Length: 163
Ligand SMILES: [Ca+2]
Ligand SMILES: [Ca+2]
Ligand SMILES: [Ca+2]
Image (tube, rainbow, N blue to C red; front, side):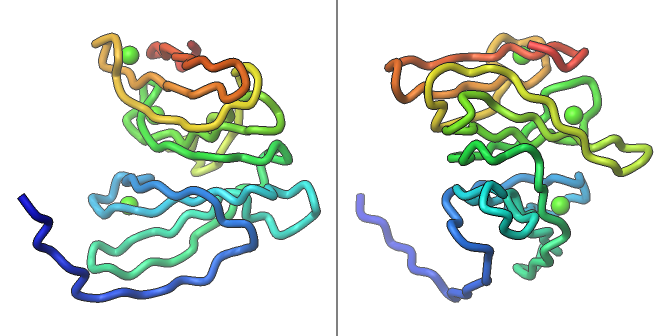
């Protein structure tokens, strides 16, 4: 079988420097997919607070940058995943931070709309990251490739949000 599709339209959106990885997910649970990117230079060179820009979708192919997370991500984030890993259905955003050897969970308080961050150690040079419920407890878990130790690390999160 041969792929038979072709893009009907292509567009380009400007970003901060060092845009590295991108994923999609409905970050604000409004039914429209959003785009989340990470910038490898984070904010360690005092660039804009755009280590993790969110491109909020309107469901018709248009996007608005709503915010950039400065976080503590001078750790050269290399990848990002979106999924629910605690007891509130609003998705979390999780980055693997290649330089800091950890992952960062960004979580939005649904009452205040304020985002908080929490870091978890991940081993030597965490690179790729993905979220799915891997143990069937209905809470998302996080799988991370650990580049320099030839390993895969899995964080099983529970309803309290801690692995
Ligand atoms: Ca959305
Ligand atoms: Ca959540
Ligand atoms: Ca789980």
